[in-house]
Image 1 (cartoon, rainbow, N blue to C red):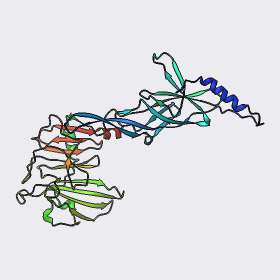
Image 2 (cartoon, helix red, strand yellow):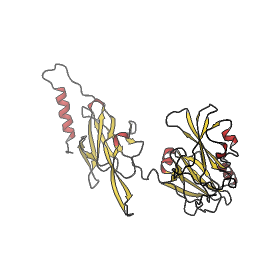
Image 3 (cartoon, rainbow, N blue to C red):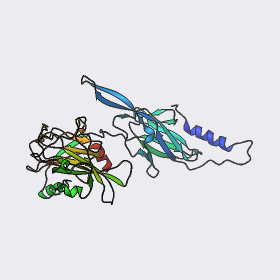
Image 4 (cartoon, rainbow, N blue to C red):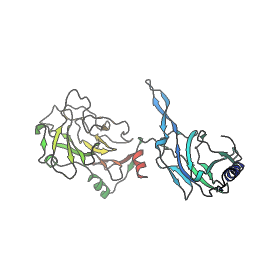
Length: 367
């Protein structure tokens, strides 16, 4: 940026606009102006990862700044992005584009290093600005007689979106009962299946540890997926090592439809284990399950991890974001529910020990 004697420049501009030897009409300089749009270009984000040997390392990726909309509050003179930029985005060197009403001129007011006086420079979209702190933009009218001041802020998340947090909670009897009432666990499979058709014999239906989850479809707002998960009778089917998973595509407000069964096969190495006190919820758009010790041919340790399914129950993988809180007692009988505020709860039905957790991005959605 070149330092500008902006008042002189504006005066020259105003005089050159008004003085024309060829045009008999007088050109009038506009008295009003203001910032009408603001956007930023590509930004850099620093991320951390681990190498094959477990060593920490960093790498950078490009953030498309143009996808983040900026709000211009004309009354308060504020410019900011409602959706914060990703954590660790570098905003110390940012190219931005700003437009004004009536060809107003933009000047950047930067404090000197000692912080005692202003340093005024003419704005250029080719220059990079440091938005580590809010930057003052001044938009002067054509006449150079007045300006409007805007404080421009680039908001950056301070936390990773997928970072999960747990806090231990104390529950009253009423809170305990209200939370347990949120469980999507039907008493019997007949109440879930009804008269709907099945694409596999009824012997594959679960009879215990029943859980139901509802997921929207990605293709049609009127359709949803209903997932049924549970275990078969341990005495009748001692060789089972996986839970039974059924799925139904249904239309909102319409009864009927058929269920199809995710038949356990040796080729699918990522099936949901057959666990005691199996619990399943829908959280962050995914099916999430936990359970106690393995039943029958399943040898899973009790509450070893959270299982997630991104393909509606077909395959299940260890969650990359959610793990059990420190101090969690794996010998309890745990219920897992999601409340209206998008908190994930773990509640021991025996000791009433309770934990409440959330992903950062679910918290941000409420703010």
